[in-house]
Image 1 (cartoon, rainbow, N blue to C red):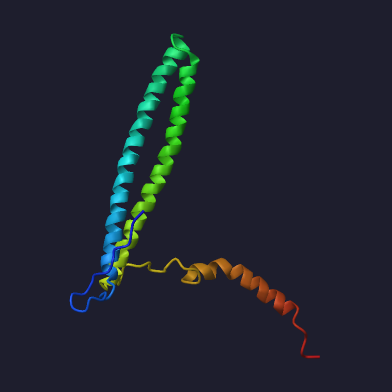
Image 2: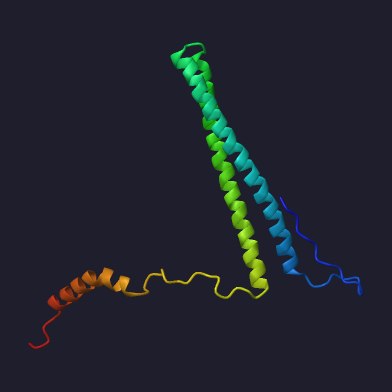
Length: 158
């Protein structure tokens, strides 16, 4: 898929210089951007092909079912091609989504390396145990447990 970028060689000693992760992340981000662009173009082409096959199938269905000038086989063929394009479209769309996520991953990595990460994460407000929603939701359970413990508590006054 993609090959790793080799670290730069230092001019003085002939040994390899320190490995630069920014260069590697930038190389990978560009590679993923090219991949995402290819999948975007494929998604567009397959999507348009789906529309064309659907319209052709509608035309074939008119001639096969109402005017009976075409064989019913052509309608089945158009339906099979349309279903194949649906499956292909879904796989291309998923691959495009994965490629865009990979681009976002490497862009976030470059931002972290540039120390530009503050305020870009999740706020954590939807975590369980935060806010009053958890208390309201579990209040009946806690009340039931407290009543049950109170009823089954041994009598210490005897």
